[in-house]
Length: 223
Image (cartoon, rainbow, N blue to C red; front, side, top):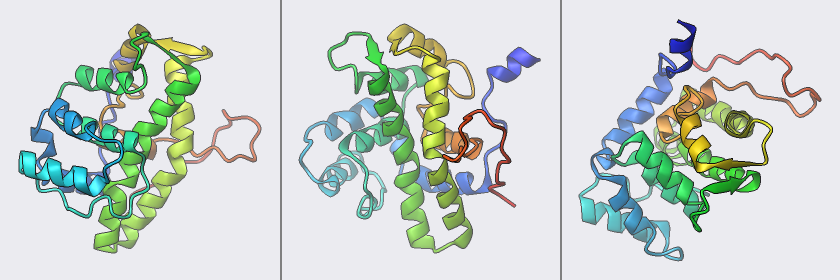
């Protein structure tokens, strides 16, 4: 029983996350192979997100709001990872695509500093794109509070995932990365909705505590 539980993702999805996923699904991005989305996103690192988004919408007949990134502060890498995670593909394919965003020389190894960048590049857009846009349009106090709590947990989740993948090591190999991606729930990093769920289950570590493993009460996200 314990082994089965360790390999399962969280059994429930919050009402807020379910609402956002439903909104994302209306765009039909999940029906397009992520490799095709990635190819267009990689065409230019200087074009505005609006122009790239317009190309994606017209090419694949998507229903993404044209102003989705209007108030977003994400990087080009975060923009790219967002569409890799939202597009159609297996977890294995997406995990590899996210890895090679940083292993451009095909060394099959990433230093700790580069892996930190990978984690930041996938976690931030899971919150700073759809959720931020959604609360701006819906003006929901409940969703705004949820967004605030998610953003407060981003750094703590980065630390948690870094520990999961690297333990005390200073680098990680592609082989070990793929193995760790199979270990649930922390290994599920190729889905924006799954990352939001991980944030919901992450404890905030106040900087005033010297001991990062100190047990703390988790704020309930939903009523």
